[in-house]
Amino acid sequence: MPDDPSAVDRIDAAIARIEAAIDARARAGDALARRHAALKARMAEAVSALDEVIARGTAA
Image (cartoon, rainbow, N blue to C red; front, side, top):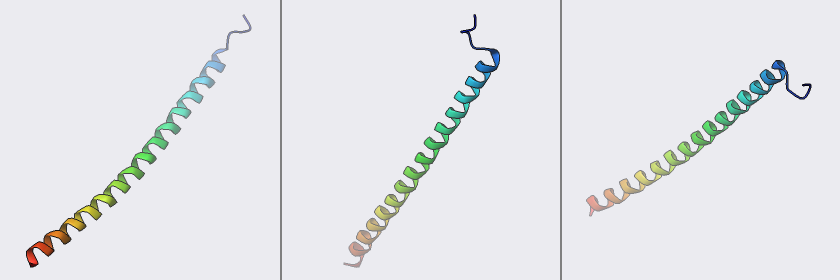
């Protein structure tokens, strides 16, 4: 049965799958961090705009 992968081949394949999963997870984490930072910046802008509206309303 020379077509069957050896134990070493199966271990190498498993390691490759694990490394690919680690890389994918790291990329997903980076993407999430970027989206979080963008959302945080947009929320800060929105709160600042609301503060300005409230300040104008109390000044009148």
